[in-house]
Structures are given as C-alpha cells and as structure tokens.
Image 1: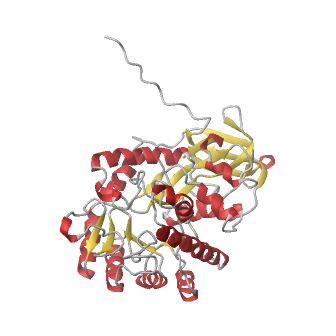
Image 2: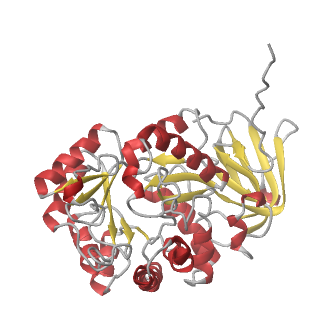
Image 3: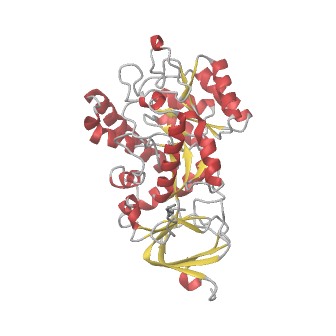
Length: 431
C-alpha cells in the first residue's frame, strides 16, 4: 500500500487518540512520509513552513481509522444460511467482496480482520488492496471456516450430496481438523475460524446453547494452526463452548455470549480479546420479521442480545478487551451499517463513547496483530485516520453516515471523504 511522501498538518480539530484518554481540544497532527510526527495541542506543534500541506479540520473530530474486527467481505444480502454456499459462483463473490471492501473504507474503516470468507477469497483480496489495485481496509485474512459434521454450518442433508467446498470444511474428529487447518496453511490465511457452538438462527438443531465441536477437535485445530503461526478464533455462544475454546488455546473469541464467572476468569487470565458482534442480534430482532425469520428465531436473538450485552459489559469493566464489528452482509444487517454497532454500544450497552472508540481502534488493531503500526494517534504510527465534521463524543452516531467524513486516510493519503480526489471519469471516444 502506498505511503504519502510529503508533510501534512491537520489542525483546528478535537483529537481522540484511541488510547481511552480525554480528547485534546484545539488539536493538531503532523504527518511526515505517511507516519505521525506530532499529535497534541496546536500550541505545542512544531513549526510548519510554507511547504507543509495544511488541512483545516473545521472544528471537527480527528480519530484513528476504525477497525472492523469481524469482517465478512464475501457476504452479500444473505437472507438464509443456505445462501452462503450455493447462491453465487466464486467469480461473482470475488467481485462482491471488492465492492464491500471499498464500501468499508468509505465508511471510515481503514483496517479489518476477516471473520471467515467464502472460497478463501480474503487472501487475494488482501493482496489486491495491499498492491493498490482496489481500495479497501488493511486486511487480516481468514478463509473457509471449520465446523464439525452436523454442526451449525453443516445444513445440507445427506440426500442432497451437495458439498460445501466454498464455505466450510466439515470435519469428523481431530484428524479431519488437522487436515482442514493444513489446507488453510497452503492458502496463506492468518486466522482460522471455527464453530464450537450453535446459534439462535438454528433453534431446532444447533441453537445458541448447543456445542458443535468436541474439545479434541478444537485442540487439534489450535495445535496445528499455532505450529504454522496462524491464529484461531471461534463462534462461541454457549458457556461451555467459550470455556472449551479458552482452554484449547484460542487467540480470540467471537461473541462470547453466555459467559459465566469461570469463563470470564479464563478470558482475563489469558487476556484473550472478544468481539461481541451484537448489532447483528439487534438488527435480527428489529427487522427479522420482514425477512421471514420465525418468532422462535427472533426470540433466540433477543436472548442472545441481552446476555451478550451483559457479557460485554462485564468483560470491559473487569479489564478485558473488546473489539467492534461483526456479521454484516445479511439482508437485515447490510454492509455499510458498520458504525451502527458503535452507537448501539453507547446507547444500549452503556459504554462511553471514548471506550467504544478505543475498542474500535486500539483493540481492533491489537486483534489484527498490528497494534504497533496503527490503531492510535501516536508518534511513529501509520497515519491511518478519520476526520469527521462534528463532535463525535457528543454524538457518536455521526460515524454512521459517511457524508460526515472530511477525510479517510491510510498512511497519510486521503482515500475517501469530502476532501478526497474523485476517481477520473472514463470518456468513451466515438469512432
């Protein structure tokens, strides 16, 4: 990804550095060759000569670029689980993923960690973004997910004889688990996503209290992945599934919904981050009926929403780490709505705007393994930034509307926002 080769001063703005500290009023940030050279009060900024490009923040808010910590680039208008494996061919899914990547960047998300993808497209999507072929967030790649036979993601009945090669590896036992991870190793992914538990979406067979993988399978995944320097995460709602994942050595927990004291202690002891992905549950409750979800499924999502909110509060108040993001790409929870989750965590869960922003920037970068490179406004880090027209701490919902963005920057280059240079128009010449 290209790096700016100039010096830029952003001034006349309020600074939120992402560390959780208070905002700096009348702030300024100096970017030199794509990295932050100064961040603080304008009165303390180093002298900037006439050769320095200046950006007037218009009294708005400057914060680190947001991190989508559970990104499904290959999901698009999913209305039922079956849509995931047979709805579109790999060629079309590849194009859809590039559209979603560009949209995420335009929405202020300068980085994202994949939460699983179809056809292992993420690796190539990451490469295309890194080589500036397409715009998108810096990406930590995942690939096809791993689920035990008969588990949440194994919905095709045996009589159909339809494989699920595009979506998941269906495993039976530890040896299958090792074989699946080794296939992912060859595809160059960084994260292995598994399904230790069920979900409210499948109330009759694999509901949110059901275990879908054995501990032996989970341990085999972790041991094999860690041997090849891959990280492991898992869709964990049921209490015992959370504990099994933590004891098996998982590097992150997705959802962490029904977390008791023992599970919380295990999480804190290993300092494992959790990505609750709760706005999906809220959207499922509020809009599920118009998409044909049954009342039983909606009730399950309501239970998940309430328990997940309590677990998230407990994790953060106990000194644990939360990432923001998750499960966008469904009809009722579409791509582009990412920041609605941030508003939800402030208004419904009860976190402060500063806490939520820190989760969505600093912790997100840490989950990606890039905490030393971006995620906070600190000297030496990449200038991946979001400049917003308005006071984000007074109204975090400003982040929901990309029309409020003056600039979305990666390494000091403006990629989106009102200050971005529009893409050139192709003129068709008549023969």
